[in-house]
Length: 338
Ligand SMILES: NC(=O)c1ccc[n+]([C@@H]2O[C@H](COP(=O)([O-])OP(=O)(O)OC[C@H]3O[C@@H](n4cnc5c(N)ncnc54)[C@H](OP(=O)(O)O)[C@@H]3O)[C@@H](O)[C@H]2O)c1
Image 1 (tube, rainbow, N blue to C red):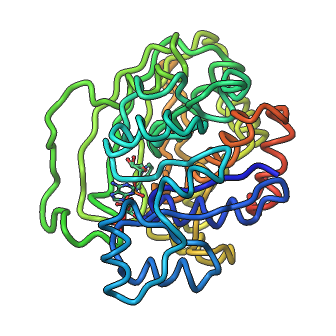
Image 2: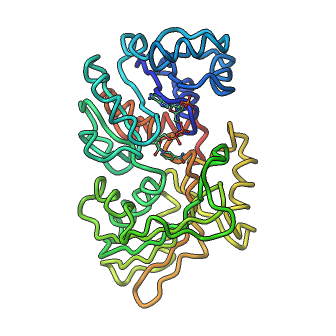
């Protein structure tokens, strides 16, 4: 059994903790949280051992009558691997502590790529993570892009990619930020950081991305324009090859998927915890080839898409399984459609 701890019990940490608990080869030893709020009480109600960040945190928890099992350092003493799901850039601060305790680390996409030895998407570079001390599961948008682009590149060859990412403003539980009645172009940065982030996983891909934010909380929407090396490729061939890819589902406007709203509604019917959609959802009827360029729309469920990647990252860094074995086990335990 791989002994794992999760540092940060927010959007990503809570989901990863549940996913670890569902694995037959992993033991969730505990989770770390800073504030003594309802999420801390939920962790305890689920039977998870809760740890504070430090001594100060332990006092804060005690004042709220929440019993912790120790501090971060006590958790690090008991585990082989830590999944750092703390807020962006906090992982960089925690890094020294992890190194001192000699644990292997999985960071998230909010950290800069330099924090870890490799950036990771299971389908693209699972084998590269074997034996590493630290890897970084890339962000939700980068994960979605890497899943589809690695598959298209393998089957048809990609000349270049242009992508526009229409981002949800914030997550549903985050009322402290967000836009209400505007489309935000902030930060104005062309290309956006997503393309270079894809290159941390797929270094040879020519990709330029732009991004804007809109006032929604569920899902990002991407529009891609892809020049393929094989200019005889047909729309049917693209659909066939994507249908075979794990963690990609094809949806259709004809079936009533006309917005991210229906996609979220569909996810609620899958019977998964928190309506999580782990798959990348590609609109089948958006797949068009015009003037030798491939057009695609796709939806990325930002809270969930990196969860299976974190589970595969734990196995990859531990070195015990092949990519196919790990993806198969993760898909089965998380009820991923195919
Ligand atoms: N949200 C998304 O859609 C999404 C998608 C993909 C990747 N990511 C990446 O995943 C990472 C986590 O993001 P998130 O959205 O899950 O953040 P989040 O919801 O804000 O959760 C962060 C968690 O870390 C805890 N924390 C705060 N300070 C800490 C410290 N010093 N040491 C340890 N833990 C600390 C927080 O505790 P308290 O709640 O007690 O303050 C909270 O439980 C980021 O790198 C982010 O970029 C996020």
